[in-house]
Length: 470
Figure (cartoon, one colour):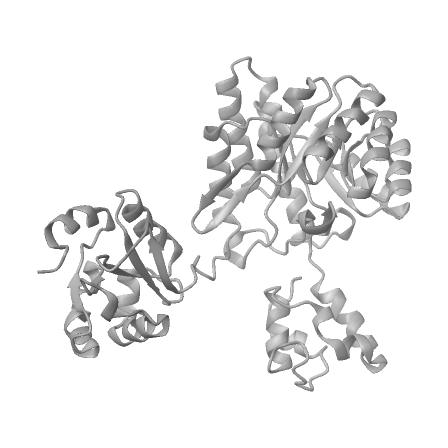
């Protein structure tokens, strides 16, 4: 959607301010369409009343993402792939983070296969208020045996409900996998210049998305896209080739950029599909598993930044997975909105009448740093996160988002019973020390106002010197 002005979307709305969408005005609804907090379907009059049919058609055309969105999987685990409108994150935001698909193969012993599937499915990492997880499993046919591949796919499905990528260049093998997994709407990989007719028929018969693979030949890839689109197959993912090193690696990155630019900036609707990267190819370059895992991580980072919409990976080592999870998280957060936690009172450990109450802001990085420093030192305490619109302590003190009145009101809203505390102490961050006198007046003796350290890492030492309050 190239349109960034709510006013131009407003022209295509009923303009009745009926509030059925949940917003107070149609203008607010138009703004919600731009930042994707609202969908066209949230406006009942637009859908039900025939007099708005022309506007509905125009609006659907306007809000359609520049990069086509493909759905893989079903139910709660269904993934949105692609669907972006911009080249660079600072222009607005990216919406659909590229899923990471970790591989299994049909040569694995059943016990090891089940173990790996469960490891992929259960892996998670808590990072700045969010759980980062793997999203897909890529089932690779190494044996080229349809029966063995089907059995492997079945085994994976019995142990995980994650969306699948069925990987083979043999149409017979893909068909065997689809007969087992078609209802889960897997992505099939891949149609090539040799097998495209058979794979196209499979995509049509089983109604599943398909990857088109024409390595290092964008003209050939574009021609195949046109062929599939002419057959009515538009749930497409593109594989322009992922070279693990050398000059072709540079060409791979340039191809990703050119495909993204063609879709987003040049509006070439015949090539506007999400692109798959294969960092797993790093394992072709070395027999050293540590080096391969490291280089796979580097490739993943490079292609996430260059617009890769799906990543197929192998290494489940923490030193390979976590850097890419963190990078992806940071790139696919909205740069217009600081990462926040819900404002309110939190417990760390098992706080009781002798525990302090620490004040901080609801900026996620600040809150979880404070929480970690307290929890890792076995300190039982309360933390009150003040709503500062996700701004850190120093900036919110300077900008007025954190002030004495807001702290007093926030504590009041929690219903915290100061009378039940043996040591009633509210601990301000050191950078908010200037509020201490005003808070003493506002609390009128309910609690002692204390000034903690500027760095939460010094809380353990502060506790030894100043807690309990004299």
